[in-house]
Image (cartoon, rainbow, N blue to C red; front, side, top):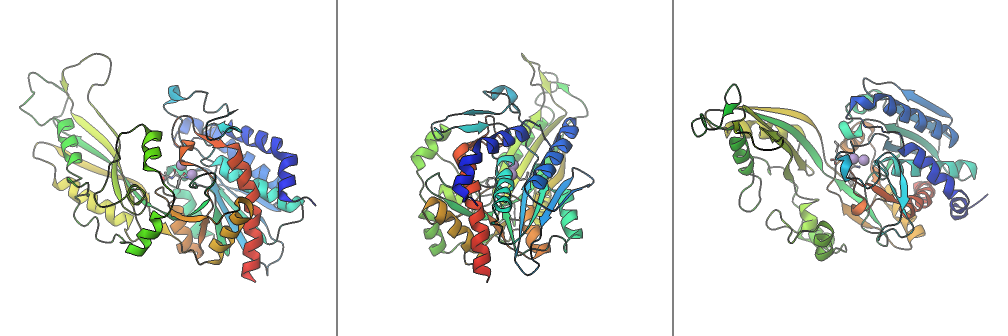
Length: 462
Ligand code: BES
Ligand code: MN
Ligand code: MN
């Protein structure tokens, strides 16, 4: 029987090469051109779970991409941990900004990762972090150190809204029953500052369309005499924030959870350097809602951002034209107690109401989900905290994240259990951006820390 450190030492090359093989398959759920690859990825995940010692491994068909379910039940009287992750990735665009092709993984040193980082789309989000759990499972089963039951549920549609997973969870409550849900799909503060994510923001995502005249027009012959949809759309969007960067949609803040002074003071203790933050992004100032710090703005406060805007002529040279239509994609990040469907309705009502005469406005809701917060006095949180103490020699800091994993609140609703977010990524990993990477150190540290969670969870559950 080996301990986890020597097991990693003896197997780390294989742990890396297996992950690299997984990263080579472009499982882009948003783009149907990659359907075969995405299904192939599901099959690879399935066989990796079999090899890791799961007894039952299933490929569950859905109306979209398959869900991989696997389990190892050693004793019905012992606790059950449900691991969730996703094998789909974001599109790599713009591909020309990558230093190496997104689906040809390479290990290169960086300033933060002198020992090397794996560069590939999905390296951190979430193939790399999901695969840490597969390897931790392999360690526990082969080295006779699995202390409880485990279920795995790995989906292929997280990056496109988890619609089919929602259905699957609602229809399989019994099968998915568990004592705690464990996810690695978030980040931590720094390599020497472990943290556990205690909150995720909700999301409402909409697309808007502004239509002016029934066709594109000559901007000289008609300019100044009809509403220009692009002018109108940008003005409407600009009006969604006031001079203090508060969102102007009536009712938007009605249910926002206000943190106590004490909670905010607690948050402010997390190490953070505004100078480094600005330097890393090459900006001369931060920007955001009046009255809140940077860390508050990107975690406990709701936001509204344009994610894309288009219309008119964007080819080479100039074309004098007034476009018939203008479009934008808008995301709103939400905080606990804001209901995403209610916010979507408020947005729609408000956006339609501010349209000037001369244009037609359409608001098409995309997807969304609720935010999530988890207490730090649960057995699950305490077990995770002890696991980090064992491998980092430090107590992790609880931290609310600004990102979203909408399925987590549905897990709580349907499966009645808490989720523990043990993320090992860093903000600098560039998830969703060109040159996404994941530190080799972080990957191996994750594999090292995860078995401790199981051990402590079982001990604390007694
Ligand atoms: N893993 C991310 C979410 C995340 C990353 C949370 C880092 C906290 C820290 C996830 O894959 C993701 O990208 N979620 C989307 C939402 C989804 C509905 C497309 C997001 O947050 O934009
Ligand atoms: Mn993810
Ligand atoms: Mn993502």
